[in-house]
Amino acid sequence: MHILHGRAGSLIPHLWRDGIEAARGETVAITTAHCIPDRQWVDGLLRLRLDNAAGIGGVIDNDPHSDAKSWAIFMQRYISYAPPRQAGEVSEIAADNAVYRRADIMEHADLLKRGFWEPSFHARFRAAGKSLRLEPALRVLHRNRYTAAQFFAQRFAHGREFGLARAVRLGMARRFALISLAPVLPLVFLGKIVRAVRAHGVYVAWLPRAWFWLLFFLLAWGMGEARGYLASLSTVR
Image 1 (tube, rainbow, N blue to C red):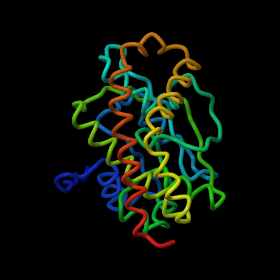
Image 2: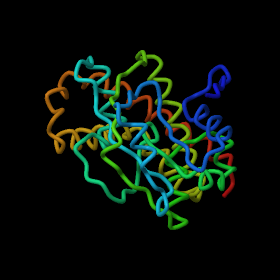
Image 3: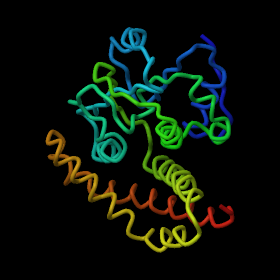
């Protein structure tokens, strides 16, 4: 086992980048301390073949003993990957429970310099005709370790990166349009999450208790995304 020490203040995508760069295998498996693998996780990874996919992701369930804050974090981050799910090709996977073909990641050194922000890589993979797959047998349990302040800061940072990556592909007129719409982003995201939770059904009982934290963390994302759009104005397309 080779243990790496990340720089102070590193976000999870920065630590993933460091691990991916240090790895020497054909595939790299990625998770976080917030996601506890089940006993079959490693064996399941070893059985997977990525011949026709750049990455394969698994499902993420939530610790049933979580408090309202932790449920809000789960709903915001992982409701799209909650079991039960069917195996097959998907447009997105969660890097918190995934395995990738390392060569496909290393092809995009310009992205990797900023960290392994998986949505940007997934967009590149799809543009190159490479697929992503979901494998429900790959299971982890989300057990939150963030304080409210830590997750707020994380959501702001991730929202900023998303906004910047999205905006630099657009013309200036569309960038200004996105900036003007930024104040309504938290409500738009809240609506999507509520619909996803209700469609899933299992976690609906936690929605009333998670409202406050959902709005609080979605506000952080919306502020971060708006900051990313503003930062993009100094980037000429």
